[in-house]
Amino acid sequence: MADNNAETRQERREKKLKKKQERIQKHGKGLATIYKQAVQKRLGQKKEIDKPK
Image (cartoon, rainbow, N blue to C red; front, side, top):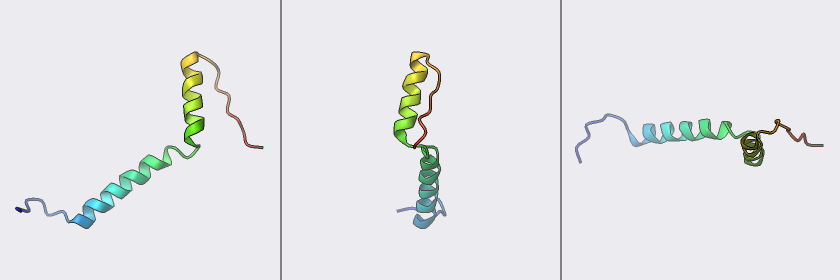
């Protein structure tokens, strides 16, 4: 196998994990809340966020 790129497996793995963690942070509220807001937006309703009691 010709190694044209000097990047190691570990470096590729670290990049991949970093990207995964960045994606996860966007969904901190919980996917259910995000989906609920998307449906409400599509229906043209006002955003109503349920606060946990």
